Length: 85
Image 1 (tube, rainbow, N blue to C red):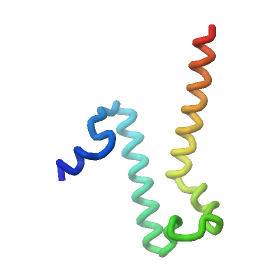
Image 2 (image 1 turned 120 degrees about the vertical axis):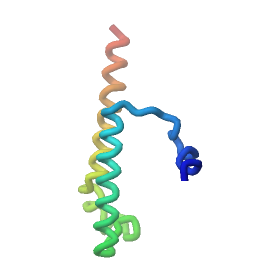
Image 3 (image 1 turned 180 degrees about the vertical axis):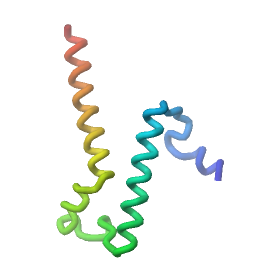
């Protein structure tokens, strides 16, 4: 199992305490959503995107990823502005 874990993309990265906490929170949300989906047989990716789009967008995992991308865009713009000065 350790050999398999070491072959994952990013396995050699060392996370800060904040990054580790964020990762653990995201994984807990992901596991919770998967458990819930398997309980009621409503696993969103197994169904039509158009029927489940609102459910997917409302998920905690989607919100986390969406927020992260928004922050990345903001910080990239901000760093460019600082470099111009």
